[in-house]
Image 1 (tube, rainbow, N blue to C red):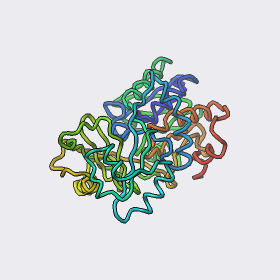
Image 2: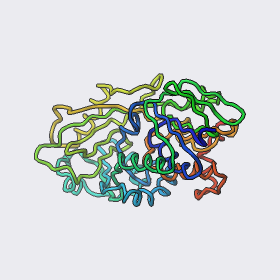
Image 3: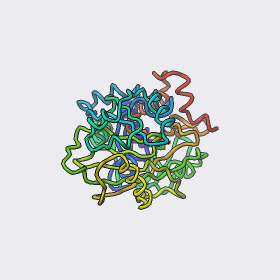
Image 4: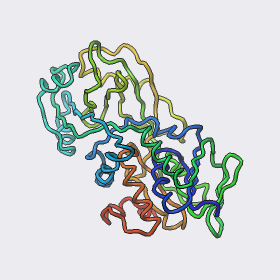
Length: 360
């Protein structure tokens, strides 16, 4: 075999898995686009919030924290989180604040922390400091360096056009070249089911969901650098400081017919801005940028990690949804443990809940 592991997908899922697998054998990572982290990974809100997600996701979040704090000197910086509710959202607010363990504060206290807020529009506010920005580029480059330091290769502009199984492993054709590997790792994000089908492996039933984002000017006269991320009750919208401005999203999850280079929907952007604008004192009059990404979920909205029980040598690292960066260290470690035949650190029930075996 030319390689031990051939990884399809150069987002955070594939790169982190490749870095952990590189200690076990020679890695080749293929990314279809001309740059790494081009799709979902390059369009992430990039927040580490340990209590955000399903129990399986929270377990991965918690198990990833030490890596986030130490890798390459640490990739976290303080952000904080503020949950906001308006009229009629009291039940949603109570549920979210309780689930995430937030401290309830008064509308006046919320406006003291974020001076652009209108306390008269707020019926519920809660905060905590234990939410962090993730330096996504630093994390991506760290994992790519680890792969290369073990003699592995990361190749961009290499769209996979054919996959063939043979007695000793896999043969993959990409960018006019043919590669062989013992183990094929499917980290293709929104394209993961299509890669599985190309390899003759039963798909999981992954669904790509579009999320639209706008960047808008910061409220006049305010330095937003130290403001927390603002989250609407029920996760109907969010806003986050970004390079001296604010990014605003309706937190939409619109299914798309087929994976593609996503673009934002104007009406969705308008909904997100209207939700944000309800809580602030200044009208948003223009956008400085907008984009969209595809958050891809399995049917149970839980990550899919590990070897396929019906297809020897085929490994899933898929279904990250919006949790790819914050779960990456623990998810990649779990995949490497399973491939190496080592006992995972995570509890057995969590490992089983993440396994692709649940769909077979």
